Amino acid sequence: MTKVLVLYYSSYGHIEQMADAVAEGARAGGAEADIRRVAETAPPEVVTAAHFKTDTAHPVIESPAALAGYDAIVVGTPTRFGRMPSQMAAFWDTTGGLWATGALVGKVGAAFTSTASQHGGQETTLFSIITNLLHQGLTIVGLDYGFKGQMGVDEVRGGSPYGATTISDGDGSRQPHPEELAGARYLGQRVAQTAAKLSA
Image (tube, rainbow, N blue to C red; front, side):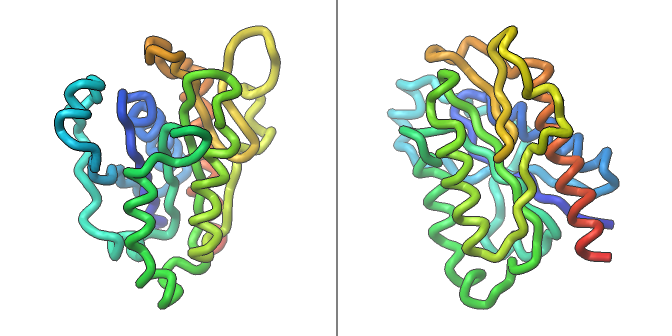
């Protein structure tokens, strides 16, 4: 069975919800899906003062070496000034050994993100994730327009051909819309299906 890793960092729980949806989609696509998060690197006083969400059912990823055990890796983070936050970047900075040996070449990759506003760096953040995946040799799957839920301007909605997205509002009060979660599931399913075809 194809194995998919959903690897995420979430400050306030929006990306955690999207990660759960991506994993649901991967399982619907016939894959086994694990969800892991990267370690929090912000000082405890910052985490407390900023009211980060610290309760989660998902364990921290054991080590970068764990990535090699999967057929596909889907990475999700919120944005920090139009790029992935330092917590996720710090993890990828430890994967040089995997890059040097080509351990991830030929696997499937994808990305998802959240921003406070509709134009708050969704696509640049997705590309900051995708760039790392491409350097590691992964084949990228986007949120193709087979998912019609990302179309239209009748209401605020996330979604990008480069990955699944949600919009949280500046105070984090907006939770992922059902259509955005559906996009995350669609992405997870496409990743699982693509990985299965490539490994056949």
